[in-house]
Image (tube, rainbow, N blue to C red; front, side):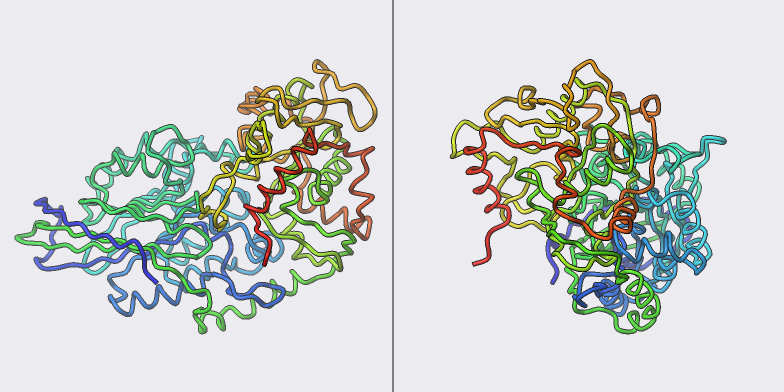
Length: 582
């Protein structure tokens, strides 16, 4: 199914900048982004069919067959290397075989790929290796704004020149400018990621002057944004509204599928996880060696997950078998269900597990944790390694930082202000929700206003959250899990994710008032990835028990108050978010 078609015409008379024959030209630009490791079309347990690059390739080949392969350009806007068992396996487990992603990209005939923040999150060993193998496959891994600290040059290739359908195409690529706010410096050491909007016009003009392309394309791993120039992580609309001389601007990061066509350019964002392919078409008329007319059109092609490329599936069957075997290894027992949405209405076994693991592993006084998967559950029974990706889907490390009691209280005020409204009656919404579909999570009907992965609760404290109180007055901390008074001026050790410690979600900076650019001054310890810590906890204990992860002497306890009002309103809000099956 194809949606959002729009066609506009621009009459122009400009020099092509090189010798090009008179006539009609057509260029098709296909874009994917935020695939997040969805390479295989089958889950590793249960054999469920899902959206994947296998399915996307069916549609990509269909466009090539209809338009002619020489006239089709395939580009990815980043976040290729994280988010699935397959990516994890080839990033960190099988490091001797050629990495799977460059092989898939070569099979699919990608022309260029931009570097995403989650690609950088994998660490130098992984993305340096992938960049090398992509280069060997003839596919540039682009990131013009990843500037080397030693010589001021780009760490990754800035741009590529590609010949398509008789046209000379320049593809300029960028990574996300906000990487330093999410990831520890050692992960992106040796480089600095600068704002795209500050340099894009200069880069475009320089490349056009040097290379004299017929078509100029920009691909950036940056969200569409609102175009107000205020967001570091979502600059695409800022660039789209201001830059001159760009025919297509491809973006990603925010997982929101959108195409916009104007009289002289197109913006393409396919969303995420191969649910759509963004498709832009440029028709050129050349007369007397000059471009006399341009016609643009754009659409989103909905990918049918069941229409996977069977030849591609066969070609990578051994790799799927290896990842499946790794994913299905038994690792222990789960003796209490972990229901992720229960974390939105109060204490839950899911978050209790994270607090328990982080506090026991680090010895910190307090821990902060949020639900990192939007919904779903893990039933009691035998645990396999695949379950760890449901419990903890990201490669965040565990950090321990120093914070005062006042900073911790203000941190929690900010977190719960992301999470809840102040209510005065049972008719109000306690959860900050709105009646709108959320393309990022796939949520239909009602969705959270803010991202649930920024809904941190604290372990190691006894506290309440007053739902009738305004922001700044909601959190009342009665003491620590160890039975001591909680003091505003006392310094505590706090276990946080590396994402949070480096500024992710703004809870430290905007809530606690801590300058995360100087977080190194507060870090007292670093530990391995939290998923690995959960794994080690299971291996040590053999099982996850309700009483063990619910030990208030370690994790403390918290609740919304007054409880009767909060419980009643929460039940209504949760029914809107997650309707009962009739």
